[in-house]
Image (cartoon, rainbow, N blue to C red; front, side, top):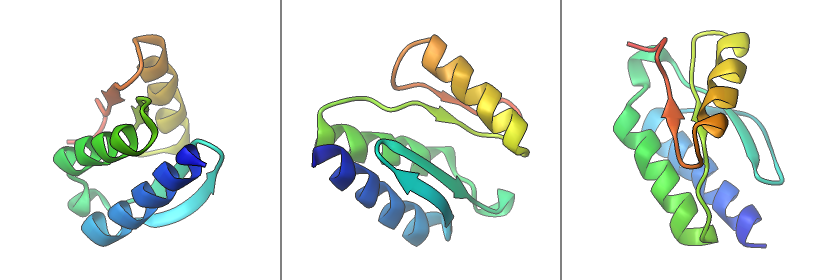
Length: 91
């Protein structure tokens, strides 16, 4: 239940702070789309903290301009340790 609550809080926060479009959310995974001009790494860090405070576990983020780069960045974030945000393609 904590994972579901954490994902729901992330969805609401992302939508309200970055006008994010929720593409998919289920289990402990969430895929969102944010216009690059609305992207803010500090908001993503707040998403991570909100998830951690709700669930007691860390989450990793992969951020990029394409689905492929998002996936690769997520794999890199998870491989380097939980709680990482990899967004090297986003200015």
